[in-house]
Image (cartoon, rainbow, N blue to C red):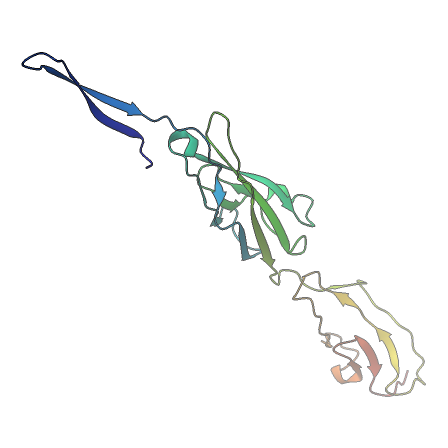
Length: 219
């Protein structure tokens, strides 16, 4: 039986006539020895968050148990390692040592890293502390948000063509890129804000950015 305290009575009797007896109450306190290491349950977590998740937001709580009682059963959580393509990844998360709650310490950016693999350890409070044989692993997937506008390679495009140039000839290609991870497709169109030409004078391929003539030139 697992009992912290045992209690019983001892009876002492003499051989006189009549016999006399004495009763003694005995209490045995069992001192817990730190003979059980903590265990995570579960040991693996996988979550997805927006790159706009607020700083300070709690993401999840890792849970662990220890079969020892008293101080030996008190657990302390710590962030052991953060693996990602982000050189500052270890500074973006924190774990509460008492509760095991994982939170965001610094802002996330999917353009910097889309996945963080976080290792969390747990140690008990024994005089000779024991740690879990297997750390908890938390995979944080960062969801990209369309927070970047396309940027043209050049700030100005200029091309010279002869007035004898035939219709439907490619005269120029413009190129723009979007640094978002997933929302990065670029669609081209002509918006004419010039008084020297009409929107129908040129045609642009919406995917490739190739510009062709649609009318004959006359200088």
